[in-house]
Each structure stands twice: as C-alpha cells, then as structure tokens.
Length: 198
Image 1 (cartoon, rainbow, N blue to C red):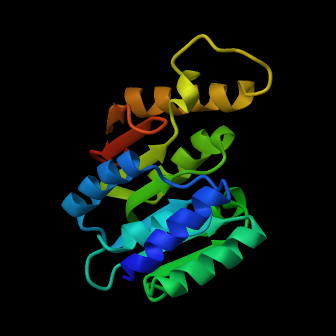
Image 2: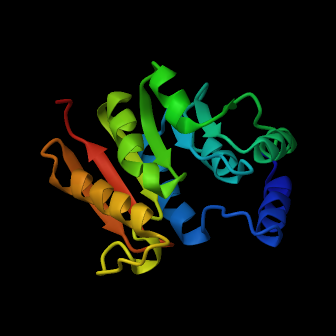
C-alpha cells in the first residue's frame, strides 16, 4: 500500500469536508482487524475509499474488501484513490444504494463495517447478521450521533436517524447471540461479536 498517497487522500477528503473515519476510531478498528485477520470485509459506505484502503493492510493474504457507495462522484473518486494507493486488487466497489445491493449479496464476511445512512442502521444490521458467521465482527460507526442517541433528544430534523440508531443499539445489546461493546471514540463505535447463529 502506498502510504504517501494515503496521506494525500486523507488531506483532500478533510479539505473537501467529506466525512472519513476519524483517527482514534481507525485505531480501534485496526486493533480488531489485526486480531481477526479477515479474509473478507464488507463495508457499507465507501465515500472516497479512505477507510477501505486503510483496512486493506490488515487483510489476510488473498483477502478482499467489498464496499458499497451510492454517490456517483464519490465512487469515481474512490476508484481513483484505490488505484493511487495500489490496492485495486483487494477492493471491489459496488455502485448503488446499499438497501438494494445488500439483499443480493450471498457472501459470508468476517468483518462488516457500517458507516452509511444512519436511518438505515437496523436494516443494515439485519443484512449483516444474514452474512455473518459464528466469529464475525460487526462494527458500526457514529452510533452515538453527537450524543443524541443516549440523551432525550427529540428534535424533528434528526428524529428518524436518532430513533433508528437507538433501535440499532437496542438490538445489538439485547440479542442473546451477540456480544457488544460501545466505545466512546469518534462519534461512538459499536463493536458486535457474533457468538452463534440463531
């Protein structure tokens, strides 16, 4: 992987105000990936490809990342960035809406990283569990959403996102076959280990 290019990609994303994974969040995810040594990672929400490029260095030999992005412009930028970082043999981008693409995937993934539309997190979880195996790890970014999720916030503008994130947190913390830790890094990171299939 080309580290110099990775730094340039990060710098440009920050300048363009494109939300990318925060450094402290990335550190936590990196620890998990080092432990799991995944062969297959699914990422929901590519943006400009920065996180997928970062994750690619922790893949097992011959490992692959499938990542989904619906914004056409970001897909173009992500493809370009992945090429510059010299990891195009490891990352495959599905272009389109994750809500439509996920049900068509029949793979099993070791790690699933969720960082897309907050209002769709419960649906993403349902799909992630379908594609998980007994030792899969499901990681969701931004689950505390500026602190709104754990407060009594109920303003109209973000109400749906907050309600669905609360539902997501409730599901991952109450299902008997899941073991979840919520880390207060970035905007909240939920790490869910699948203990067994229901």
